[in-house]
Image 1 (cartoon, rainbow, N blue to C red):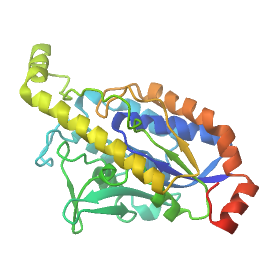
Image 2 (image 1 turned 90 degrees about the horizontal axis):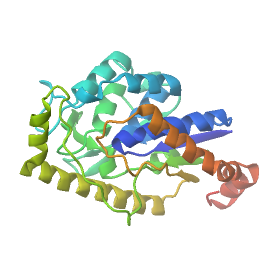
Image 3 (image 1 turned 45 degrees about the vertical axis):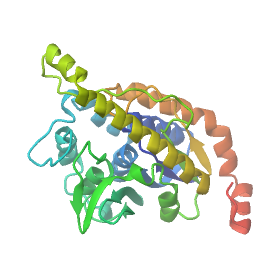
Length: 293
């Protein structure tokens, strides 16, 4: 049973993608293509590069989340840095390119020069990973070719269209990590290095700057919800999975394994619908009438 994945953005919530993939594989589904946005793009790239779900989970769990967003000289005008992320990518994806992936893969980004969505499916996997997670204002944009790229979730939070481009004849299973539009917005605190003394951390969180950060992040969250809602309405996947990750913030420190477990539980719930979506009857209807199973 072959499927294509569209993995949505959501920061730390994205570890739920690992559980979704693990449960689908256990059920006997073969993932033949993977598209991703933001954290979903990271997971798609690692998976397409040949890492197993367990290996990705181990890698993500080994990262020092207290220093994940530390700055280094390569970071430009942005609130936080990606020093920890770069170290992970340098030690894993390194010089690997899209030509070397095991299955078709692409990630999304937004070009803030032209105002257009960009699908990255050529070049270095490492560059594509940094571009798709570059949350505007929080992380430095990535200059690649003629583009100035930021997080793909700005324009395409759950890249169903990209998954269909990669595998036109396969059912698309999409994983959305966005809250419903009517859900209350959570508050956000600035991630600060764990090495700082507790009084300094508390002082940072009490500043007007921290309050402005909270407002900005809630606006980003709300925008992402809305864009995901409308894009999924226009181009719905064959199956939509929504892990219960609403209590997790985009930049929270989390237990990777615990969040992955939420993905497994969500995938378990939709297995009956997925079985129907990939049945030969549904596939035949889609082929003959152009409808989605």
